[in-house]
Structures are given as structure tokens and as C-alpha cells.
Length: 365
Image 1 (cartoon, rainbow, N blue to C red):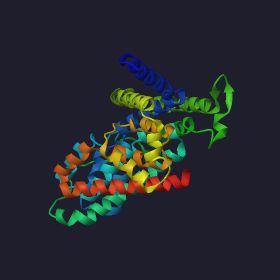
Image 2: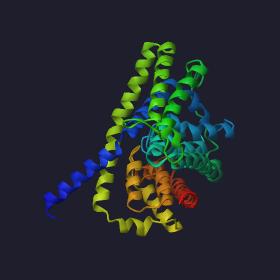
Image 3: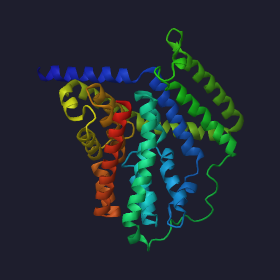
Image 4: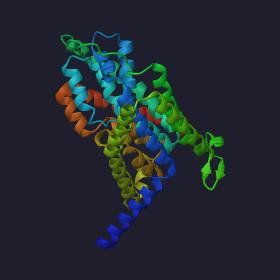
């Protein structure tokens, strides 16, 4: 094949893969994810969350906040680093901080729901569950090994009244996010697990499309009645900013997936990361830890690798290690925490991701 033939083949693979990924259900799910992420960014008081990273906060609270506050931050492993560095330098405890470092890229609302839309809710749910559990395990281990050296550090100095977790009445915020959550769960429901939501109604329209439309109407009514025009504008603007920043990266990831499917022989994939051997899961976890994945780009790449023969276990290992680690991440945290701590964090993430992959292969393989 000459150069022109190679370029034509590559372009055709990119276009075909992109069109395949951008199905109507995935586009709706991604759009809803951006809206929900934008709402979280605008309506949730981050200062309220960040005050719980100091050493004087009860551990059960600081670790819980660190593990779940990743949902607030639609970030990749590199863009979380400035926040991590700031918290640590201002006296934050290394345990909750490394918990946030692992959880934020792995369980942000965009990654979780996009994973569910592409792989199904079994993998999407397990990915979120593993990320939350392992982030706490990593944080507790880092605290056990290194917190004594940090005793001289003070608590995080966030001055003044940080206020409540939300700026609005709690029930309005809960209903606002609950409606969007129901929309995301509905549109990402697979025929395998929820066949009743995938019954054809008319010309490609399924029952889940009707229910999602009804929920959208309810959301519009709720927002227009409870929220001021400037609040609605801020929400939509933040959602647009996130989409403008992340959607091009998603297309890049899909394009890379297309090139992989076009030029990487399936036998290589099945030979190294097929099946559910410990070695296969370790290789997937280690590769994910060293590669850089921008937010969402890991999903189409892993999906393509699965189509080429990657086992469901190694796929989970890569989904966990990929977003939470990268060579730039390790190099940066080595400057912030120190080399020994960075290597320890890397080792814990790789080992736990390998374990998760192996268990997932047994459960879903």
C-alpha cells in the first residue's frame, strides 16, 4: 500500500469510527453529562468541600469528601495537579489529597456516564465503585506510610465563612440533579439489562427516548420556575465551556481509536491483553499508568481495543489506571510529594487496577 493509500485508509477509519461512536444515544448522553457537570460546577460550593482536606478534620469525613468530590471536577490526571499541589502546600493531609488525586479523573460525571453509554451500566457502575473504594485505600495507605513526616503541617487555610455546600435551598438542588440523573440513567439503559426502556415506538424512537423527553420538559419547568435568568445563563455557559474544552479531546480519542482499529493487528491485542490472566491485567494497568489520557478519551480507545480482542478485565484495569495516572502526573507529584511517595502512589494504583481487572474478568467475563 502506497502513502496515499495508507492516508486514505486512515482517514476512512477515523470517519467510520467517529460516526459509529456519535450515535444518537451517545450524543444525548454526552450532552446531558455536560449539562450536569456544568450544574455541579455552578451550584456546588467548592470552598465548602476543600475545607475538609486539613489534618484536623475527622478522617471519616475527609476521606468521604475526597472520594466523592471527584464528581464535582471534570478533570484529567494533569488538570487536577494544580489543585492537589495547592492543597498540599497549604497544609492538607497527604491521605485525603491522594484520594482526590485518584478519584477525580476516574469518577467525574462525564467519565462515568460516558462509560455507561459505551460499555453498559455493569462496567460503568463497577468503574465508579472501584474508583471510590481504591481512592480511599490509596489515601489511607499513603497516610499510614508518610503522614508522620507531615505532622508539622497545618490544616488547609481557607479563611472566612465557606458557607453551605450549595447556594440554593437543598431540595431545589436535589431535584435539579435528580432529574438529570434519571435522564442519564434512562438514555444509557442497555437492552440487555433494561429491555422495557428499549421497546421500539416509532421509526427508531424507543421508549427511553420518550421518557427522556418527558424528563427534559419537567427539567425546563423546574429550572424556569426556581432559577433566575442569570443562574440559568451561568449554568448553560459553564456547560458550554466544558463541552468546548472536552468534546474536541473526545473526537481526538475517537480518531486514535479508529487508527488503532485500522493498523493494529487483533492478534497482538488478544495475545497480550486478551483473556483474564494476572499478567494481562498488569500489562493493561501499567500501560494505562504510563500513557496520558485526556478526560473521556480513554473510553473510545478501550472500546476499540475490546473490539480487537482485549478482555473485559484488562479493559477495566486500563479504564481505572489510564485517567488517574500518566508519566507527566508521576513526574509532577514527585516534585510536590517527593520521589518515594510518587513511586508508592504509582505502585498502589497499578496493583489495585490489576486486582480490579482480574475480579471484573471473573464477574463479567
